[in-house]
Image (cartoon, rainbow, N blue to C red; front, side):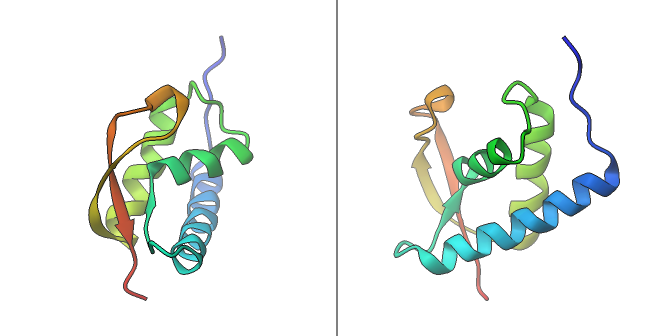
Length: 93
């Protein structure tokens, strides 16, 4: 099994796209919040393998605390994490 890696340039580019995507979701949703489930959906569409756990967590840990404000907790709806408590995030923009 090969290890999934991203160059720092690619990671930075994807992080920027992810922030834009999540801000758009916040504006479009009645609840005004996003979660790690939304990050994983984005990464699925970008072709990041589901078993690249450390890469996926790096995106979550980079994007949320630096760009969004904590807005509560909910339970994950992703099949691999169903029922786990996850944070909700919003933006003040």
